[in-house]
Image 1: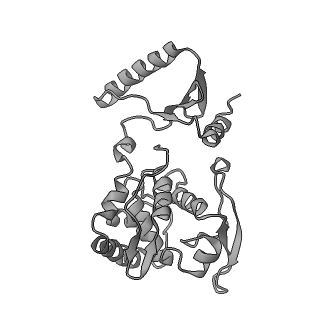
Image 2: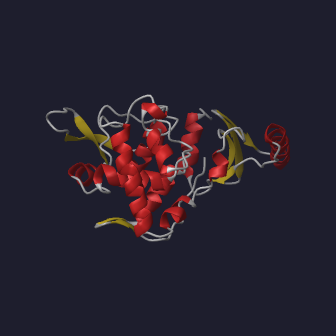
Image 3: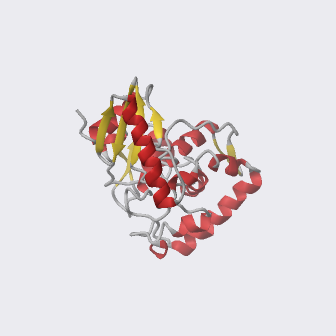
Length: 261
């Protein structure tokens, strides 16, 4: 899990007359980096769903992909959402309204993530593999769209290729803001990490958390972690440590997950 704010500075993306701003691209990158997702694929899919928000539900509900009720998120996400506009009469139900686009991007990345357990797109390194993972034919529990895989891929691939032609080098630049090596299966347990908050260091493994008050404890932990990683993968690796000194919201949210007192 890679945290922090995106530093993407390549400007807006265009596809014909439509644009997605640099600011929104950064938000998509931040959402995608919580999982093993290429942000360029999410950007492609959001274009297909709403031309990057150029739809009624996109403009009114900050909902670029038509997420509908019922829809729930883990409480630690801190996302503000409520019932949105009504879906077409022949379909029934309601769309979800998100307070901000940032809330929507985080919710959407979760929706298609392994953590949610519906789709099989994490780790996809081509738009074809990503699209396939949205459907049962690619290992998903449900088909993402009623129109089916063949119809959907006939939209994703041309859209992705069109953006490459119109924005030379930008999709590669966007995806380069995430280090995908950190997600490779079998290397390290991504639920095992450490973080700094103030002068303290907290070690986390799954939902177990321990504060390290002695610098020697941190040194021993690093040494053992490196040895175990080398034994498992043939490559010595350091435990991931995040500086959350100025990110109390994230640190405290994880403490609540771990029931840390």
